[in-house]
Image 1 (tube, rainbow, N blue to C red):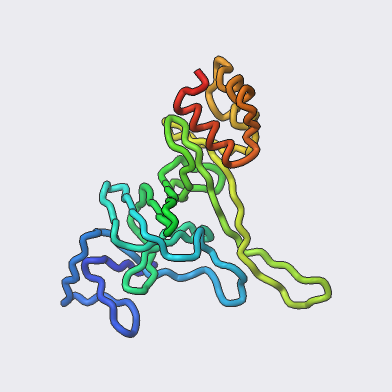
Image 2 (cartoon, one colour):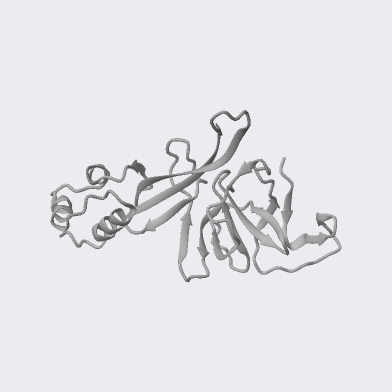
Length: 226
């Protein structure tokens, strides 16, 4: 069983992480962490992270509490949210509602959990929110470990390989996987009167790219097609 480390008792010593009952290290962010055991080794090319650097961010727990003082990183191989405490990587154990990663360039990434299970995804799966509203466009980035051999070489090359998939989530909690395609998007969205399909046609949006999917769903949520 993974050893939980409660922040109000967390104390770092030279030998690693331990809990010192005599230490009352007060922390304003009431989150619980466990030691991060990376699912990687030096023989695997690449990394398991959404972005391979620590970024400032905000965690919103399902309890309603927020954690705002830690740098964060998302392991998309294991679907684990990490936070940095005095140079150590810990996994957030508390149920997470959503979190934001902020880059040095001023952009940000919003991730959210709590959606109904679909395919291999559970309610704890972290999806990137591309556009929010009555209809929410989600993106799921995963990494798997692949193996290959170069021509005439005996050695097996292992590397992390990323994949992306898209989903539509509705206010009732339902979630449906879609392709980057206008027809597929229309099938997932309630367009009973056909006005959204006509709007897409007028704007020349085929929804073959992520940018066009975002533009289309944002317009739908704002009733621009009415």
